[in-house]
Length: 97
Image (spheres, rainbow, N blue to C red):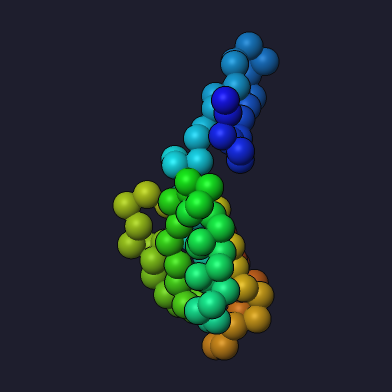
């Protein structure tokens, strides 16, 4: 039985077979200044087996990614946060990584 949420990764080569990636291999960073939102998102994703880490603001998220030994596969950003919006965080992360 396949676990819900397993994603198939397809390679550009026509001959390549898709590789299955199980949830426990997917690293997700959630960024929200409201702690309850991070808790809810983490609870849902962790229950599905994802590796979830959190940051409470934009600079924490950027510093977390900069210091990470393995980059997150997915970053979930709150759009409206104090001092640095989710869009600004996204711009920095895209520029650096």
